[in-house]
Length: 186
Image 1 (cartoon, rainbow, N blue to C red):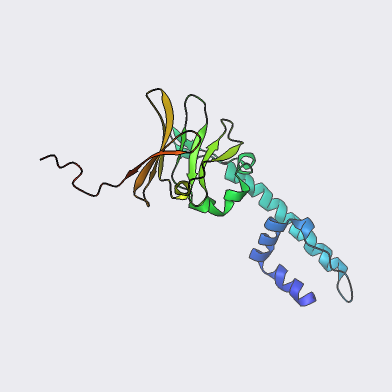
Image 2 (cartoon, rainbow, N blue to C red; image 1 turned 90 degrees about the horizontal axis):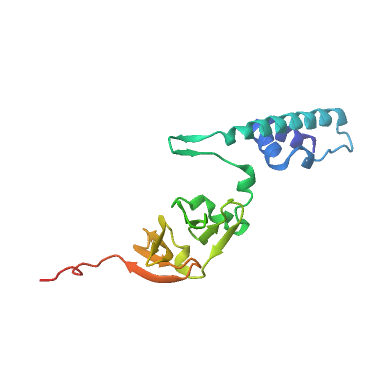
């Protein structure tokens, strides 16, 4: 046991990862046999100090990014609102967000998961629709009104199509990539 403890704490990256991921309180004190309780206590104090430093640095993440009208910030509280079942797909998100100006609801697509509606306060996420096509990459999204009816258009570049959706996520129309000849009126 003594040699494995020495190995863990000699590696600064492992120690920092343990402090960040587990927190100091999750690292047990092992004091049996010939283990040096004072040494282990010093190591636990060191882990506590490193965990505190990491927590301080986490505040740096809240710094703003961007410029002009495109300034962004990170919120720990809002990050916790992201749906747990969508987390495995989060890394693939990149298609944007669009707000319905009438309701303040925000819409986005998560490849592999589907289309989501986010409350105006950004705290409640709801998955819309059950059509498997909604799980494809949504590379662009627009909320628009046509003939008094609000709809969502999603561009799916990898599937080479645009889907027109109701606000409930139901696919109302699919526009596929032109095959050629569609506009040959001669």
